[in-house]
Structure formats: structure tokens, C-alpha cells
Image (cartoon, rainbow, N blue to C red; front, side, top):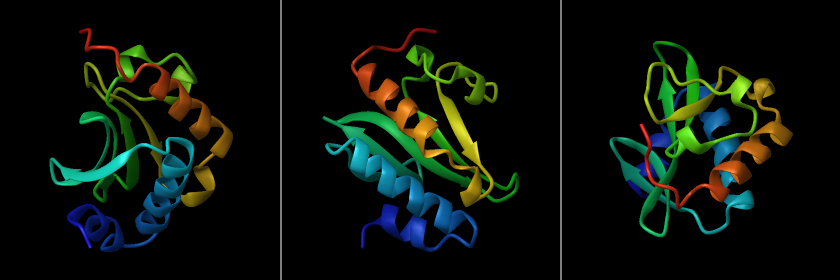
Length: 121
């Protein structure tokens, strides 16, 4: 197993189930993503460029699905958090039941549509 898979499988519940569920949807919707282990978390890349990441925050009790080009996203902005970050926006989940697959898929497709845009601060 690679370090990203180890990270996912070594998470306590409910985080492991949340991350595994997100992983399945991300890889189904954006088939060319490549799962790597960067910055000590699972990070999806497309053509050697960062796309999104999965970060478990046990202290704050959520899974953060962060989008690298968050500044360019337009779908479901009311559900995305910046958490005082300038560029990255994310969806946060504390339970498997919170995942609305329709919204998740819309945000993934939106992120894919802006994947080649450069950072704007």
C-alpha cells in the first residue's frame, strides 16, 4: 500500500468511512486523478498539478475535502469554507450522512472545469 492508502485506512471511525466514501466518488467522477501522499495527507493530482486533498482533523472532528483552485469555484459557494485560507476552499463532513452526493459531484465537476486556472489572490 502507498502512504496515502495507509493514511486513509489508519483513520478511526467515522473518519475512515467518510474518506473512503469521498475517495470512491472522486475517483469515479474524475477518472484521471492520481492519488499521492503530499504534505502528509492524501492529495489528488491531475497531470502533475494538485486538484484536491483529504484531511482528517480529529481535533475539530471533521474531514476536509479541500480544492486547490478554490478561488475559481462557482458551485455551492454557500457550502464551501475558506477557514481563513486565501485560495483553498473545502467541503467539510463530520459524518457519512452529511455527504450530499449531488452537491459533491457538482463541486467536483466545477473544480475540474477550473483545474488549469492559475492562483489569483
